[in-house]
Length: 194
Image 1 (cartoon, rainbow, N blue to C red):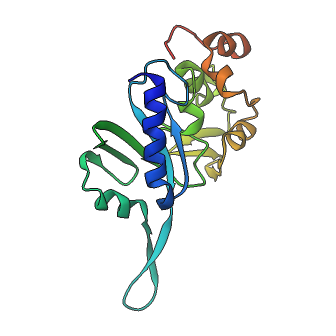
Image 2 (image 1 turned 90 degrees about the vertical axis):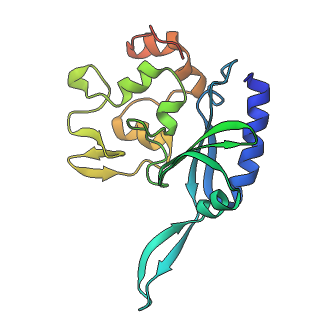
């Protein structure tokens, strides 16, 4: 799908799901402003409602986004707690759910802001330990979708929080997308396509 059509399509989806979310944003090819968009990717933090047991004790949080999911009668390829892949108005959508405390971080197959915005090698460099040529300080690692420092979870509500935690200058979306900038500034391999 060409970028102008994709951004229009994604924005219409955002308008649909925004009432069910605390925070929602378009990520992936659209955020990178790729001419040809391979997939529509949305990152969201769902609104929550507490669920109580018969004794009035809070037992869990119910994600309000599930109300939208079920009311639409969507055809799902995947319908997990953190990742939903479905057809909406004729196109495949990848919906990634996260917590507000992990918004700024991406690990493994779960797409988050810092790693879905640009050069894949730059993104990989961000979460690789310094001893292996990456950016992460020695006492830090990424595990189970958390940035850990000495095995303690670090809150990354924004990309800036993530960059500050690992002590790396936050660069703009367009600079992280630009392979030459990432290579020149960080020594990151630029043999990939954005």
